[in-house]
Length: 114
Image: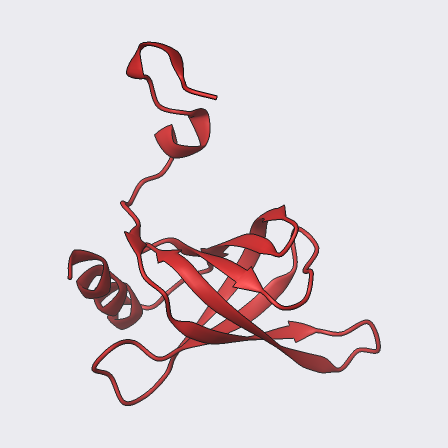
């Protein structure tokens, strides 16, 4: 449904960083109910300096803490970031990165400008 008068939807109005649409295969290291960790395969549909939107192969509850491992285009080593699931609709989730380092923020900033 369109938003009247060209105003932005509340979810987008609150974003601090613009998102880049990009399709990258990623792995999430997530807790398992048994206390072990499990690998969840996913693909990004967008990334920003503060988070990412993903399509996942397994549902993740809101508030789940994960480690996202993604290989940036042109980079050899995977970028590993702590993140929290902040949105969920079926197999689509929104992650917020938790305390990225200065180097990680720089890499994400470069990715989003490309």
